[in-house]
Image (cartoon, rainbow, N blue to C red; front, side, top):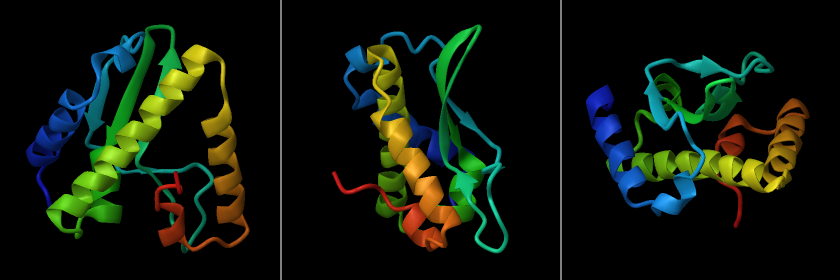
Length: 133
């Protein structure tokens, strides 16, 4: 298991590797929450955790990465595989931000289709795999 501080440092490194231009309009920044967050449509026994979220509201927009969810789903992975999952989740949420700024909803549509597949019996391990790019 990785400590919150270790994951925080990994996330900071990932953010530092990201071109600054992509953060335009992300007024709330990137937050690492200690929470393990279940998706509201999660069903037993294949619990569906939210790894990260792009949030918008009155105070602006931000990305939240859920440390607790990462520990539940990926906590036993080797360090580099864990880091890659973290990088993928961050990139996914950053893409939501970019698409919102440009008025595109491709990733939102993709997420909805994936959730539909989850409800149709998709294996939970497949759900947490990154899309083929």
